[in-house]
View (cartoon, rainbow over the protein chains, first blue to last red):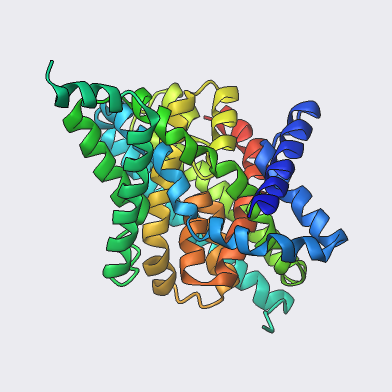
Length: 118
Length: 237
């Protein structure tokens, strides 16, 4: 577990350095994600080495959003003041974005014959 | 002061109590989620946030004090984001084969998310600060905070918009996509990752491995596109 966790943190660290050093529009962890994919392509053994720890972390991905989520209570005032407009803007745009994205994916997949064979 | 209040005043200012409370609340949320048949309305993040919100309110604890303990959990968002590279690596061949639908769905989903939110927000008379904080709501929290700051929004408010969007997206995705009769797990996962970032991705992994992998790709790609798109769209409003 410790070697895998160290490797994962090193990728985040490299991502953070690249993001800040090169002024990329992406935050460090997302750059680290890209670097991890590249490293796994170069050395598939790395993917197997990390697999069990990665599955453990991703199995509880939701947990890591809880502290930021509790931040909602710190903004209840402004949320209540503009409640209806904010709620409608967030809810309707999320429904529209999921629907439009999924329908586009399915339609373009059909047109281009990019159907999944797995 | 008696012993109990001394112990309380010590514990309530230390990270241990609020770290334990965060894990316990999530445990309760996850247990309830499973007990209710893993239905999307019983979102474990939402349940945990409601429990912790109530506990903080009743005990009169500030969010700053709470966060000193909870930051250890919050920190894990970074390594977990890096970990999303592994399912992406596992599915890279399928992603390459789906390059065209991926690009089309990304552009449509991302544009609809930003433009429709700003149109509705403006119609309800939200001010510039709120609109700038809301524009990047569909991207993952650290990216959204960076974008909102550049647009003149408020970082913590942007994080709240991101969280609310993610929880709502994760709750609505399954019934919505069933109603639209979308059966392709790639399309289902990808659209949710684009519209509802990491919380949507966590939900996608609960439902289907392929959906989860495509959701994490949607989340990553939309982080890049929104960084470019949000300033352009906001300048039109």
